Length: 76
Image 1 (tube, rainbow, N blue to C red):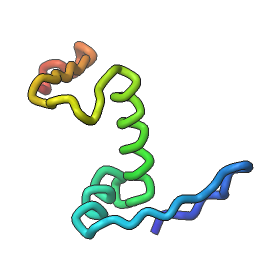
Image 2: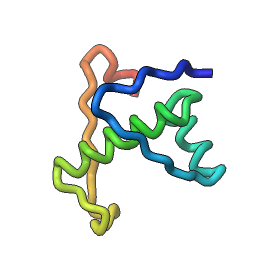
Image 3: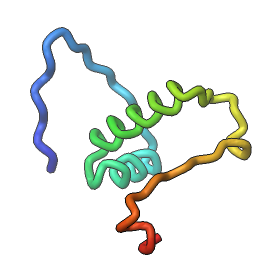
C-alpha cells in the first residue's frame, strides 16, 4: 500500500467517486496506486490543454509524435 503523503500547506481536499473500471485504469496508470494514477492523469490533461487540445475536439484528427534517443530507435 502506498504511503500517505503530508498535506501541503494551504491546500484543500477533494472527494471524487470512481467506478470500478475507472479505479482499475487509475491503478494501471499509477503503477498500482489509484492516487498516483489520478495525479498522472491530471498532469497529462493539463499538458494537452496547454498545447491546445480541448474536450470537444475530435481525436480522429489529433496526432501524437514521440522522440526517442538514437540508441533506442532500433528497439521500436
